[in-house]
Image (tube, rainbow, N blue to C red; front, side, top):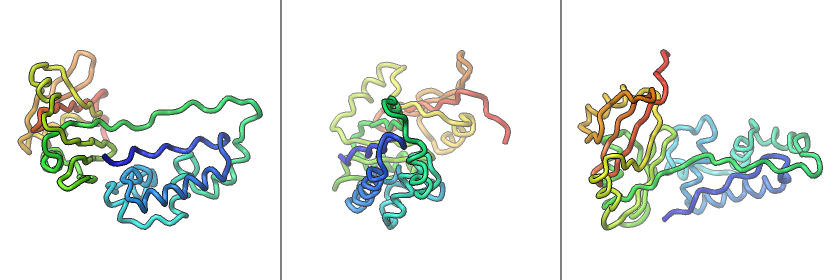
Length: 228
């Protein structure tokens, strides 16, 4: 299984500039070692939002780029602004550190064939294949826009069996901006729907799809779509 996502540096005021420099050097090292989690860091920069994890590893990672990533992740437009802001944002003596913030979650789906599952999510749901790890692959990830799903090989996907017996077992819930348009897109590709598009009593709209291993993914629109 690939390395877990690297931890983000603390907000300015809690660490020194040297700590940010060290974190930037770590990003360069992780990139050199082929750590796919670097892709999530690189996508923090607007010009790289479209890159998959695999494409991110194919790009050069000079120290200046790593420092820019660290700065943007910390709320600054660039490295120079971070350096200038370190002193200004230092808390008074005895101030409590900022609480940790959870940023991203990636559901891990159990599948019998990682490569086949990745191909299904790509062909049927329009996801990009970020990476496949192992020969044959035993772990991988797919993504679409800012949503990522991880795929893990198991001999028997027990959650799929459970989903077949229990109607309400959903393994991942993805918020979308226009559920109706996405439902129409998936319908045109012959997707197996565990639940078709429906207006819910709580005001939202959702539908559920079932992958070849029985994993059920819910696509949910919490608010009405707004006109462009």
